[in-house]
Image (cartoon, rainbow, N blue to C red; front, side, top):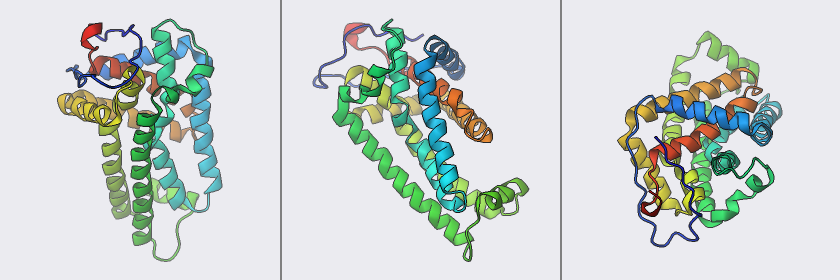
Amino acid sequence: MSQPNDAPLAKDDEGLPFPDVRDVPATSPLRWLARGFSDLRACPIPSLFYGFCFAGMGLLITFVFEHAYEYTSALTSGFLLLGPFLAMGLYEISRRHERAEGCALGPTLTVWRRNAGNIGLFAVVLGIVFLIWARASLVVFALFYTNEMPNLSGFLEQVLKMENLEFLAVYFGVGLLFAGIVFAVSVVSIPLMLDRNQDAITAMLASVAALARNPAAMLVWALVIVCVTVLGFLTFHVGLVVLMPLIGHATWHAYRDLVGPLPSQG
């Protein structure tokens, strides 16, 4: 069971112990989703605001790069790699709802100021991963398409007809590698930095520890995120309006379950 943290936020990261990472059952992601849905219902307007932002960015990327899908796929995938950072406002909505502080959108828009330095460092790390993945994505396309890059319809046709299994295997294999790295360092990173003013390095190490201690639950959680994201894409990003806020709120509750309270708060 997660334990609410009702104590004031730490003013700095000096003296903070390494987070107490806990073991959770493999079925925990289902509970996180249920709690996330409860937050979404309790705070629909600010939550859906972020959902529209996710959907709008996805639609814009697809529209602008319709005839150069090698860029669309890289940017869309990179968009997902940066998801933990973009969902920061959703974590804050859940935190405020937990503390009965209301569902105002305004305070969530600048929540990064609470721990700007460490959150900025984490954003740089994700940004570097995104740039490397974008370059790797283009290289994969160049290896398999020496004459002309496919447009959106051509790419989808090949995926649906499975005419190029080598390309699909390599492309999604490389993407899975980068997604796994991001997932490992971001399971609880930003919620931890927001909630305790934790430093970025410790927060990322705690995320890796959570993954190492709970491989079954983390595998289920990763599959849930992938399935929900694919479902959102299959609706031409419209489904992301609801699905991304759901995942964002659920991530906050994952943090609550995976990381124990500070000793003074237990």
